[in-house]
Image (cartoon, rainbow, N blue to C red):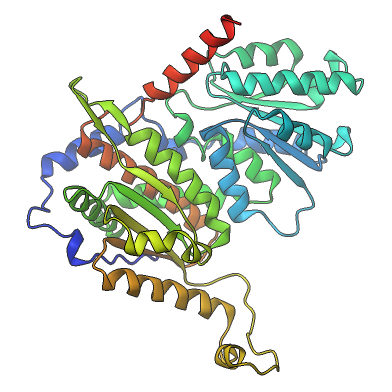
Amino acid sequence: MSLNLSLPSYATSENSNISPKFIEDFFKILNREDVGFFRLEESTEHIKQCKVVYQKFLFKKTFVHVGIGGSSLGPEMLVGALACESIDRQFTFINNIDPDEIHRQLKSIGNLEDTLFYIVSKSGGTVETNAILAIILNFLKSRGVEDSELRDYFVFCTDPKTSQLRELAKRHQIDCIPIPSNVGGRFSVLSPAGLLPALFAGIDIDSLVEGAKSMADAISSKTSEYALLIDLFSGLKNALEKNVNQTVLMPYSSRLRNFSSWFVQLWAESLGKKENLEGKTLNLGLTPISAFGATDQHSQMQLFKEGPIDKFIIFIGIEKFTHDYPLSCGQETPVLEQLSPFSLSQLMTAELEGTIKAIESDNRPFAKLVFNKCDEIHLGQSIIFFESLTVLMGHHLGIDTFNQPGVEAGKKYALEWLEGI
């Protein structure tokens, strides 16, 4: 993974040394039995299961992914970044319970027999996902689909042991792919939750997993990628000590726009905690902000550059784009003449470097990561890199990185409200 890191003086500290004990404990967290994302690529069984289901439903032309939070953000990120241009398949992500939006999405489905509904819920009891499942079941029934035919339209993805979805799948002989019990939803993108839609999008999941494994191995063996991880963590930690408590992820790539959205959930849900591990109320966390270049240079960048100095910007650049366009068009205006010697990818890189120069001139904290290109290997590496960075920051904050009590509380009160109607 070709990455470069640049940190301004603002994000450095005289006390930036990290103790061996801190690192030792970090690796203990990564290797805990209940933390499976870091070792997920060691097993190929889930990949085989995805490929079997994919071959069974290969003829399907419309893929409808139903999930919420990590059950959808990760898969959307993979498809948005890597979907093969030659694949003639429609993707629909039903990731919210807005009745008007669901009506629009279901109305857009053409040939029902060519449609596969992929229902993803780790617990199998996610209220929003089950509500959408109920709507789809009624939708199929209204189109004349019998209960005995549901197995031709559905695939479930859920916990391998205890899950209401698994019980329903068994009743109707619906294919059910497991999400490992020790892999949480926001860390599940490289589990079947993300790998099956990736297959339908024409993504090489073997290379994706290979990239993830190479990054996990590099971190474990403390090679250059590990050093980069520690450097970026140190910059974020030192900036946080100066009350820089917001983290902007800004890739200069439209294909990685959903990567920022995926990061937002990972960072917010993992690090935003009321209590530390000792049960003390501290209300900890770093607020993530999603952005992408060059579009957000014309909106959020004004705030990033001249607003409060409370944001650490992580820029991501792409060294080699898959496609490019010359900017010489044979017409003469001052701007067109200025652009004519260059290509569009050169302009994108110039926009990135110019923005960094502007941010640096105000001595605001930032880091720049450079991907050689946006492909399966590099995206797999990046997923593990940012998941590991999240665990490292959670370890520093002294919190449980893997729970989400604030989310659970909202669900509890929502159900209580319904019962009171």
